Amino acid sequence: MLKIEILKYLGLKDANSVDEYTNSLIDKALLEVEQQSGFKYIYEKFDEPLPFMKDVSGYQNYLGDSPFLLCATTLGVQIDRYIQRLQLKDMAYATVFDAAASVFLEMKADEFEKNLKFGNLGFRFCPGYSGTSFIDNQEIVRLLKAEKIGITFLESGLMVPLKSMVGVIKIGENVKKSCDGCAAKGDCGFRKNGTYCYRND
Image (cartoon, rainbow, N blue to C red; front, side, top):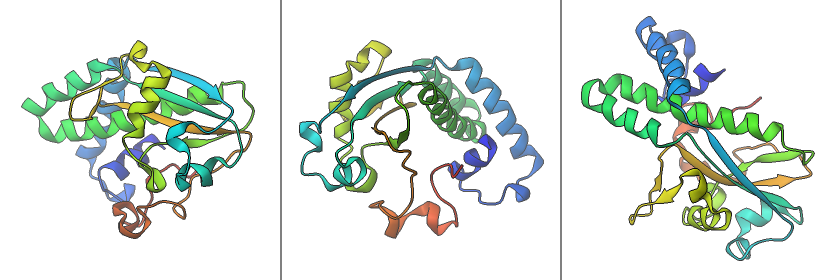
């Protein structure tokens, strides 16, 4: 399953058509990502919409009146440094490793959330999805004090470490992600390639 998700990041639709060399790079990357990763996660429960969520249809449509979690997670700065080193000597493998790190982060976050004692949880609704603003990443990091797990922002607004992710998770209903409510639906590279950006399991 992880390999399929990595292939999506690489823009490869059909796993059966991937050559042996690429498969070997993916297998190697998955092992090295796990070795280099310093996975951390922080979260907090809220019962009412926060100021940055109010009057924003994307959040309203997802949450309704439900309580929710704000969450932030990262693989740590070591992954970023390793990718930078790879880019200097093997760009092909660096690209595969980067994709593997993104998939690994999502997998580790999913595993962590399954063990939280909040009953049913929806998917991670990340800023930028369904017309919401990427700037909200900064507000979530501030509210969670996610600098405690190493997440900060550059002056450009770029979140570091790069393999970090923040989001909103609805409590009380196991909402599944779909393409229908996504603002990028009309111009989505994944859909044009006959697939989708999320795990459908």
